[in-house]
Image (cartoon, rainbow, N blue to C red; front, side, top):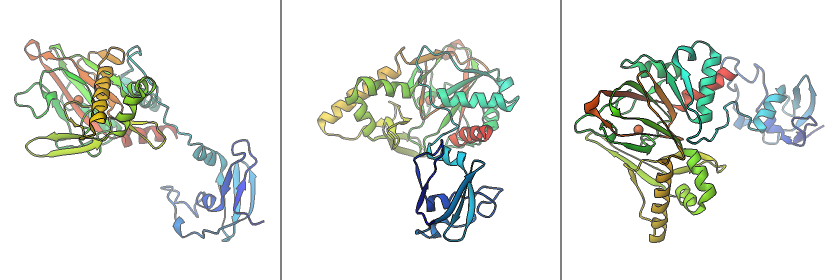
Length: 356
Ligand SMILES: [Fe+2]
């Protein structure tokens, strides 16, 4: 027997050609993989490109192979099946709109056991946000909560930022103005993946919160206005932040797609975007498309409205879920939120580990 590839007559892998070199790189066992870190102990780039399969057999759900370089080894067939079919433990996204119920979790229960933490993280990936109740309404609590999940990202604002109304602010968040649905910091490289906003006090009249599923808005545009959808997924907009210390800039589409044409990221912040100088017709279309997206993101059709009360944390995927607030009157009571950012590495990595 001397084969360039094999086709396994198995209910999982039926009909798929598996090339010799591709299989050789997937051999399991301590001879090939360090058992502590599961990293390869050899350099796969140096394997013979003309490697052949001299013999193989299947039993006990393992594929055992002898290669032409004299190496023998085995591979778990379930692992092959999961890799080939891109089966992921991270749950699929559930697109939602205003009629969905708020995804609430209790801080006293989340970290009680791994099941509760898993449920919270799965919901976060399905809906792009979770609301945590019953946290301590004290300063820095947002950091304590975030660090139970993963490292906090430090930016030029430090580890956390205080959302309070203050004079001469370097961001409109630090006023009492209404904030329309937006994503945070699209000018950063990379854009912060996850935002946590913790309410220490919300005694003012006004200052209610809202969240919008940006992927739901993108889906609506894709179905109902292909011209707008196309220009929003193809035009690179420059986002810019300026203060006395730094000027931060980053380009992205308002609706960013991945290589498979799926929604990857929403960047929407009308306070900070600079549209490129397109041809007149295209520019006109872009402005109409952006206005349409703005109206959808701020419409009652998509917005889930709630009040972030004392002791609550809103944790949301800043690459998918837009957030906003109504204006408030600082003379009617104190309003103080603290926020921070963590990366998807933290939530996704922890969830993968919990589900393994
Ligand atoms: Fe914000």
